Image (tube, rainbow, N blue to C red):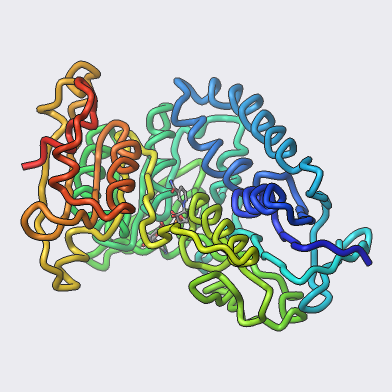
Length: 425
Ligand code: NAI
């Protein structure tokens, strides 16, 4: 039996960043990874999709993937070669609450602290034909070597919208089928609608308030909002109807509470119901974002070290890398209204911004919500070029408890897109 201070199961962004942080703080860490290091994000998620977004054609994207992904993977392996880290490239299973075993070699490790960072996997919908040929999840779509002529996407969430945008730009005819009235349920509805309308202008067909019934003979059959059955023909069908936490049967041996659908139950410091076992990232079902996983892991290590930190996990920015981009931090205007919070909403548009005009990227808007009287900033919702960067700036203000007035009083470089923030009405 080998001993360490900390066992980390999974080397995705949550796992490898946590291991790095713990190792630098002097803890002896063992990391288990049953597939490639880097997890979904690096191998089949954020990084490959962003490589597609920033490529001129499908062929160029495929070519660039061959260097981008292995290059980053080598970087992660470099991080995990820290003298305080042992990387076991095998799937791990719990033996008991303090012991983990490598499934193939049987090598066992024990530690007082264990972090589960096993991530998530695609959730498929229970309709006939879902197991058929050319019905793929996002990983399958990223593995395609030829560009499909017709792509049908089920689900207009983050994954559906990003792939719709990128494949349409590559020349594929894209049709989206979505249950709800609007795309991107977590986004401000005004911004979500503008984004969808813009994508429609670019040739993507959206069937909203429609439920998929069956997939057969290269067709997706769905019921429209009037209750009529329609169908879409497609060479490839992408199922983007959400992801589920990746739980394993052996978790029962550790004794913590978990659920197939909701993931591992954790408290506000990501400790499971068993002391000393933590769950970070997608597997705890809280926020399925790489950067959330990383910061949750740092919080856990700080707790293990008995260190207080000021990480604001309640201020969680997110972005959707469509064309144009969309991003947000904090509650939407609709949510604030529903919560009956006193607030003001301020807007501005890219079309009046010098940098946006010079870039030819005038489609876009900013919505800032704050407490009355240009008070404490509550949220930012942005749609347009470099939306994520603009939201990142507001995230810093919200984290520090700053007001809209303080944002406006901050000198912004001219000409930049960030001036849209201080141009709000
Ligand atoms: P999602 O939960 O964002 O969206 C799924 C969509 O599918 C919803 O709009 C839902 O109404 C719809 N849907 C579900 N069942 C349906 C059916 N039978 N017929 C039609 N529509 C149906 O899930 P998504 O896009 O798969 O993403 C999974 C996770 O990955 C999310 O938590 C997301 O935050 C994360 N992610 C984040 C990215 C980013 O931050 N840029 C990029 C990719 C994924």
